[in-house]
Length: 410
View 1 (cartoon, rainbow, N blue to C red):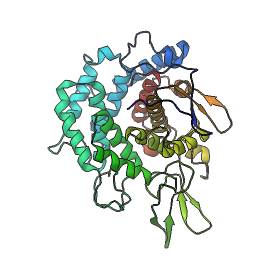
View 2: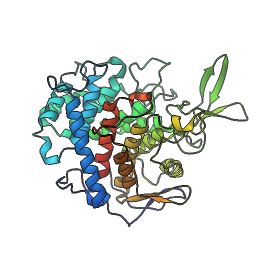
View 3: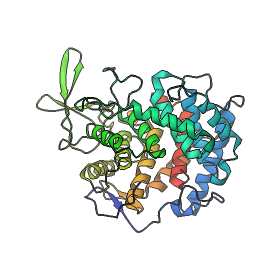
View 4: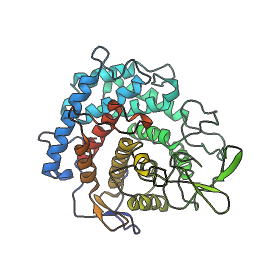
């Protein structure tokens, strides 16, 4: 990320302050645990202890023979990269290169690479698996796998949807096929691909311009999003157009949080937390400046909606509390990575000022919440089964990575 000067944002923004010090660098020593600048001494100790318990749980749940997590499941390459990143985040940087568990996981993941560079176990999730594998290799700084990482990077770059710029999926990334209109590119796939590209140091201006174009079509900001998507519900067809709250849905004209019915018969996709943080992070990684109106619109929605208790944006659901637990640990990880990227883009730490004027030190808020939710065996588990978070492996991998981001390790 380029370092940008600090600036003042609009009301309900993520307010840059001088009241806290920036997080320490990711390669800072972890002894003791050494991240009090980010969290304060007591919480730093609690987070370090929680990461130790999480690592112990993850080590006990892996397959020692293969070095993999969930080796007989549907996406072992993806799950191994996901858990491997969590273990890496819980390991002192100076010990990563000699860690046998991380080495075995890297070897397993590398062994899943195909001739075209993709790394996957299930073709349905080829983008997810390849992208998270790239992030794992990059974080491990494993010189032995530079060629593997480069081939995977080239696969992801080549998988970006190009062609006609009026295609709603233009600039995005597919699950499996670029030509399946029933499965358009979505922001979740995009954020994994963008994470991988950023971790791999991709500087292709055309690539990032296409990413930015795609992001424009998922943001609820009609000034820059003029896309019209036609969807059918039963026998009725609707036109879905952008709203103006600055947040983001799942894909152009689509939202997992539902829709707002307008008086003119059109619909607007509801913005929700995990995708709006994904939007913010991807805009910053694409080189959009923090004082850009698109970024300011996103942070305005996020500030107004700030919470560490649920994935916000599902308030219109029949059971808002239950709906808000969908993708909860994914949400917290995306939040942490997005706000960390925002701090890097401004060169300053920040606190969040919400709609009620209350301020939140986001690292402390996220870290304290996760510590409180850890189970006795060191794992985390979501009460919601959606998006695989009822699997302790998935929830624990997300939670441990999030704590590592909060400390400054990842």
